[in-house]
Length: 120
Image (cartoon, rainbow, N blue to C red):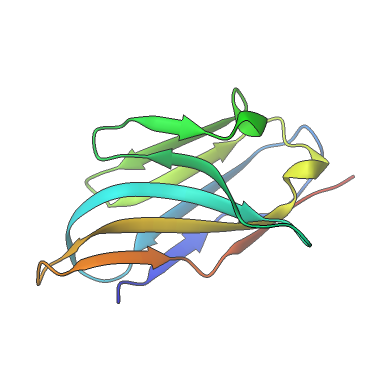
């Protein structure tokens, strides 16, 4: 299975910014959709933002206008720029990527999760 390496979480004050990044560690031949999900304590995992291979994006209503998802196809990396963070954005953020490995077998992988805490 293709493993994903996430980085960029941490503690930030309300109104602050963080940038998450995620990239597959294994060899892949193509990537389709890349996305970020989050799960707060006691809540279900929810979609935050998603970007397709043709750069079509969709966002959760709660983050529209504050978060931006982007991808660097040359580095197979997806980013989530989070601005104007609120305490309710506190959660573990998970990266999800699907595509094809060099063997042309499909994959659909999740990252290990990175904690984002918004607090004063």
